Length: 622
Image 1 (cartoon, rainbow, N blue to C red):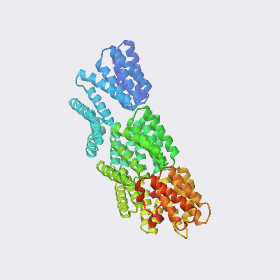
Image 2 (image 1 turned 135 degrees about the vertical axis):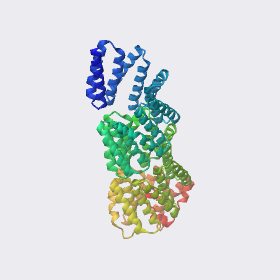
Image 3 (image 1 turned 45 degrees about the vertical axis):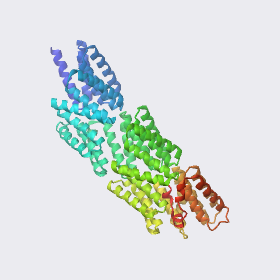
Image 4 (image 1 turned 30 degrees about the horizontal axis):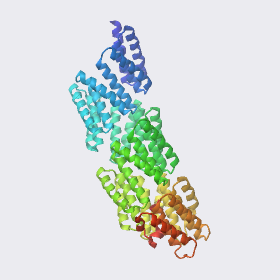
């Protein structure tokens, strides 16, 4: 009797240590309980203690120990014919697999657990199982099942008067409302949960609410507020030693800093997240961090680094059979190919990403893929089709409230309209893009908006205003580390100087431009550089200019960039219009005839008017 009393006291002490965060104290006491129970042959209590001990090791992410303990507990519960104990083990196995992001395996264990609990009738443990199932179904976008189980859990939590259970149930309900973009309702449920967590000093629950409030603020594009809220969550997760969610906080900060144009801060945050999530063996978080690193390195003009990180992420998503994640990273690989102007490989990536988006029922990804497919249509010269599809996509993004894609579409439209000489329509599209961007704190778009605004001012004859905007774009993109945009604005400024008979300061940057273009690896930028270099050589009456012009045309043709080819040809025909006796004119004219014969009819819409030719610059074709 005295020994039983000691065992019960040790068990209580062990569980109390665990609740207070003293994992080592809990392990020592629970191990002693196990030894004494085994000596007495009380195998059912041994199994129950094994489950308690597995929770401590689970908290420490020592998964090999967790598997061994739960496997032994499961065998003992089967021998003891204890369906309740077996249901509890299955529930815990589901939670472990869920933390390892093995969603389908986690769901299989949860279903087994729920079936066993159903046979036993309603109990509080069953409510926690249903809560878990609701969350798993939400992750898998099975809304009907998720709502059914969240309601079943709520009824049982209410029946047993479990405030803590109701609080976590409110969090899962909020998660479901977020999936449906019902942000106000989601906020209401987090506000229901938080006071309970605070009163019970449940730091895990409190931090969970703060993190999700931050994510809501990101969805509402209230980025400054989101940063403040996520910082509170970070501090709480740090206190309780939760590396997984602390890593998620750093990922969220990286997203915000990227949106605000602080690429270097975003890079640092992502690397911190990667270290935390890697040490925690969180494959899904690691993959997400790798994707974000790929995006940032591409923005910084480091495509090889971007490529490496994206491929690492792709391997993780394949290994874990995460179709949604695989669709996202495939789209990002397509974007990298598009940056390098490798249209065939970009098309292939977007085709596969589109199929994966359909499978995962991910509307955001579908619209991102469609946006890039339209961009390729434009590059290939299908201009009217691109314009129609852009308008349809913009309306869809407005309905779905996805401002990032709205801005991107309007900027692409503005570039096309400027190329076609439709200045007022281009101004309208650009104005819309700027309004949406400012409203939603999408600061990373500012250098691009300034760049296209400069092109618009050039076409309207305001060279001074154009130069100011292009300089703003160049300076801001330099501060943000956006090397591609900085290169484009520098090209536009150099071309302005080449148009000016007196020259200017920007021509001196031509050699620096060559290094940038080589580093970025874009065929389009290389073609534009050869064109500018040829024009510079021609102003100096140096004989190499024709070689550069031919290199430029060949590069555009080999890359399948038909719109760029047309723009370059028009520019060159204009340059040589008074030199029809030169050897270059008939060769360039032959290029033009072949392009217009083989290319889409829409290329005729890019007209050889002197006003357009003399001012068309890199942002319209780069």
